[in-house]
Length: 113
Image (tube, rainbow, N blue to C red; front, top):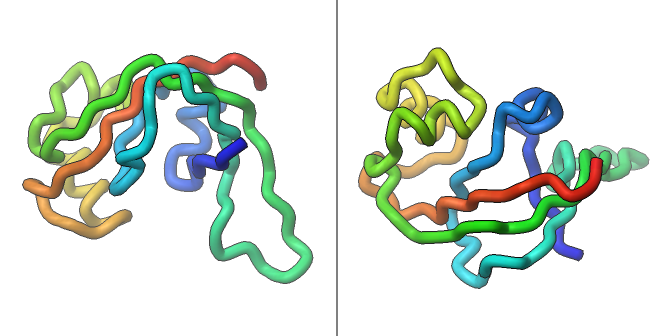
């Protein structure tokens, strides 16, 4: 099973306030795919192991420019008090890219924690 990291939004994933995520790439993903949600899977130090947070099932997937995010999706990303602009700034700073970058919007449901 493929890993998907929630290092920047671990708390939102764990507390259930996040059921949508945006990723660069992930063009292969389709509805029904199951992924292992992990705290982080890259940049592990020697001896560190992947910490599994649960398993998710993809219930929706589409490609769109980052600027197409809605207020509802900012909330579903786990940031109920943020504006669209705050989320876009956070995303671009954390993951690089520009506001017009095409990202993969992934809607999911937890099936195992």
